[in-house]
Image (cartoon, rainbow, N blue to C red):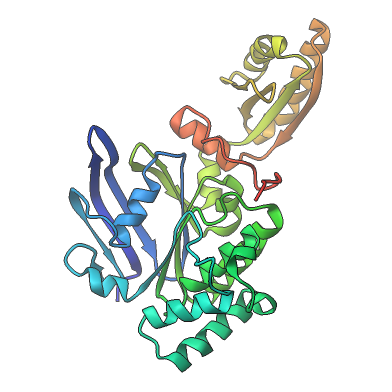
Length: 327
């Protein structure tokens, strides 16, 4: 039995003049939680749709659970679950009614569908709301119900396409807990996300996707190590001072800094043994020049730094997992 439960080699997919996938390669180990990280339009959803047999590639090949997604789509579908970007629940049915319906559509008998629904309601902490119409559920409850529905047949592989987009932090954490439980039970999960922290906290391995192909892959720590050392961050008092701060940071560190205008922040990579020298040197020069700084400090690289370093641009503007997002 192969160690990789999902494989893709040279996938291409075009929509008119737009290349959604351009030589997409992927190998997901069995039992792993693997994250595809990238901005809108990077090709993440198209890749998932092909792997889940919802679309056919223009060229290339892919297999899930040992079956070719083009030649054996029915065999693939028997072994997968899919949760899309938007909760696919019937608002006119109760929570339990939704799960029973999905069970019956999956081929379970009435009694078996009812038992499976009750198991999933308990697993995702929805038992108390089982008899309520789904239209009265919060965003987080809908997402948990949708996730539960994708597990009706206890799939070998679960595709999660940006499952926490638009959720508040508490609901997001509840979904994360559910996903971790699945992986611990042996389910292979392929997760697409724009949330850097989500990939950092959940994934065993991360593939950075841009312009329809995978441009880097590894554990979160392996990817961060590519940046090299730590980061010295300076938040300027005034946006007008950013150019001067960047000039000072470049001269003291000997490296090219990154400038984040909206945050009034300049960030420069430094080797660990040099971080204190660089930090104090920047402080002295800014003080001598009369340039004010709201904050200055040393931090470990993040996946945001990785994405910027690999692509030359910041990751797509997705709300931070720490921000409150209206539901």
